[in-house]
Length: 182
Image (cartoon, rainbow, N blue to C red; front, side):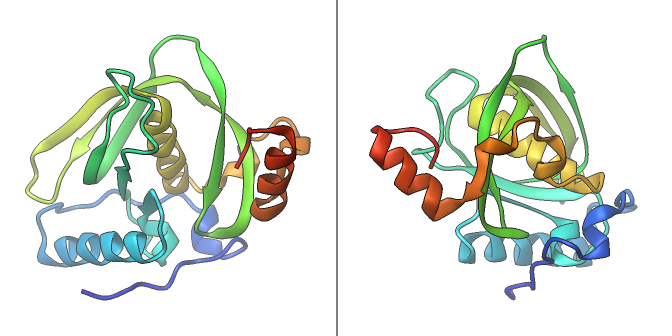
């Protein structure tokens, strides 16, 4: 396995729509997924989309760590997961602000409006169907990574730029106020 180079904001591959994966079971797709998972762990990320590693294909990997899950029945810890050729849909009208960061936009975080409950589907590297209905952090990370497949970075979804800043500054502000963003 290998650590992959992460594309940074401004790189053209991040702003284009990714192509479907023709054969999710192909050995090169399995290698890519393994390398993406290793890269995600190395960077302490919660998710990573193929365009972020300079590969314009419709796949992403993610995980939901125990300390990120809300404990809601549809937002529980999840091991490393791959979703190839995904589809997502919002369930209901409930949208909430979720604090997000991105490996392609290091050092910054923002509150981004996201559907609170979604359904996602796709396949894994064996071609088996994957998907579920999820809420909370799980729903947010899936939406964030799915956006990368359509050339959308989280600042493009923002409505209130007063809730956007450097991770360290947001943490200091939250500590002064006794909780919050970071």
